[in-house]
Image 1 (cartoon, protein in one colour):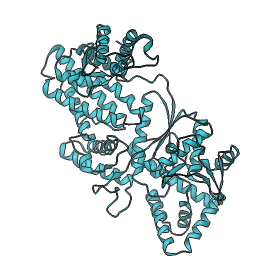
Image 2: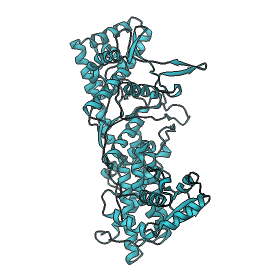
Image 3: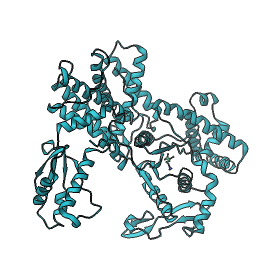
Image 4: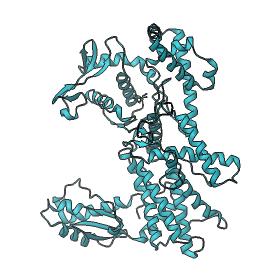
Length: 588
Ligand code: ARG
């Protein structure tokens, strides 16, 4: 058995070979028959439309071609084949094969997930809040999705570099510097630096609206900072240092780490030469005093990020990389950042986990790099908004943006109540740890079970429910599986072979084996929700199995097989949730 390949890959290889033997030259050399999971189990476990796709070209009847394929396929150790409808080929995996696969998974610490054959260096840019500016809920999404993508890619064998590209060099520092010198409460700063700086920013911002003499003073502070004034640089550095401490506190509660914290300011010195380089290469030019990049006509207008349609005409939307006053912009910094990552980190891929509103920005950045000859797997991993129950952007009662820290605190408080209700007798220390895992898990899973492009409603009751596709449901399923093993005498020793026959056993085994297909698929288009949906299916299949098939009361081989399926379920649930950064408590 080739356990290093998934079932659909193996079937696809065999099917392609058979098609080649039938069609000969008529089959394009690069053709690979697609084999996908069946939507409906009545049609087997996997199916292929290859015969239908090829029949036309080969001037054959699709059913006739499918029949020939099945005749030529021979006896497969994996599956039995059938024709369905106009020429689908259905594969029903043999229970012996599921048994062999699950047995192999029992001794495989990767649980059937093969490493990629060509590891890449992938930089993942996520979270990246702005110093002293309100953190918007988008940062929750970016932080959780980005961290998960990093874990998934690492597990697949890629070299992953996570980088927190914080906004540490914006115009907000004018107000903060003035505020630091005039209104900052040092005590508050020590207690909660992020909050203190945010309050200073908000206060100065609102004072500026009432007193018009103030804004020029703030601008003066900003100019002093930008031209290297020692006092302002020192304050600026302190702001960043305290912010980092505050952020680290949040990240550590979320169990999230970064390899680098190369904020926007890290690229300051690279900006001027970069702009000159772009001018020199004829990629950027002056327009109304500013330096801009316009379309080079490479794309069709509808795909051109430097054009927008207005009243039926295509109008230019250049990327500004230097303002008329000499200042640089977000785009300039991102170009320099991308250069750095591709040169210094030798990145093959750079994934930016940033909200959908920045789509145009990233399209332009990637296209400017194309003009400069810098290419790679550059992706804007976009996502939609988090909404309140009123379907409007999620805000606090007072209308402020919701801070990630507040979300964490509330999640843990609510999870404590859940644990309290379920296990009042649990020792206090364990209760705290479980509540932490359940609360944080609930936020993460609510995020990761969504299609990232859709907006979703932030709903405490739903995300903490013990039923449905939630972290607590999956954690509770894990706890139930693990509790079985506390009831057996001695250590559980996995059997070498399994005997799977009951439907509920087959259903569970089928899902367990799919783990090796689902995990890699999440990286195709950065879709962790595929894994979330899978884990939910797995937990449900486990519960059906547990109702249909007595485990501890069964005997001999049957008992061994069932215990092994339970053991694997626990392992896959734990590993899968671990790839989301979610802890699985042993009891709850
Ligand atoms: N600081 C930005 C924001 O809060 C996100 C930065 C994303 N990363 C990047 N390389 N542009 O919107």
